[in-house]
Amino acid sequence: MLGSVMFITTLALPNVSGSVYASGIDNEATSTLGAMLRAQQSVFVDRGRFATTFEDLGVPLGGKKFYTFEMVESETGLIVAKGKNNQMNETKDYIAGVNYNPNTRIFSTTVCIANTKSNQYRITKPTEAISNYGVVEQGRVKCEKGVEKVP
Image 1: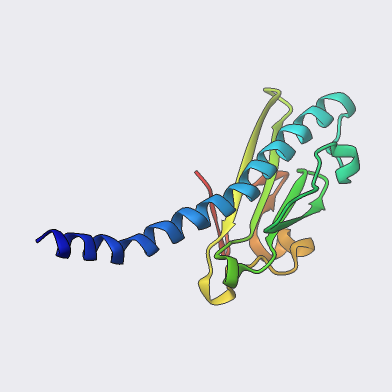
Image 2 (image 1 turned 180 degrees about the vertical axis):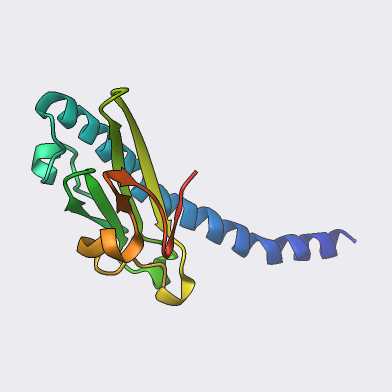
């Protein structure tokens, strides 16, 4: 009896550890994007516009093992986190931006994750994210067409 329980546990561990590994890798993207979106809000408060370069943003990007980052659009501070090898590393691409309501003076952030397995969870042509993914509409960040909102 004990031997069969140990055998079943051994079979289950690779799946569990693989998903924990993948979520740890995704944390590199989500935590960096979170820092960047908070920095975008600070830049907007100081300058009345979002940063257009990572140098302006002031968030260090060194040491990122699984993701590269790209600024896409300045109206909403749109940033893409691209997995360096989604298939091998079990990563997914992210796209994120900041919404600002000038009437209420309230910021909100939106983070979207690629959800198309057949495309290896990539966001292709991020510079065309607005038209390709419906990510920005009338200055608002939203998730559509191959991406879904991260809760």
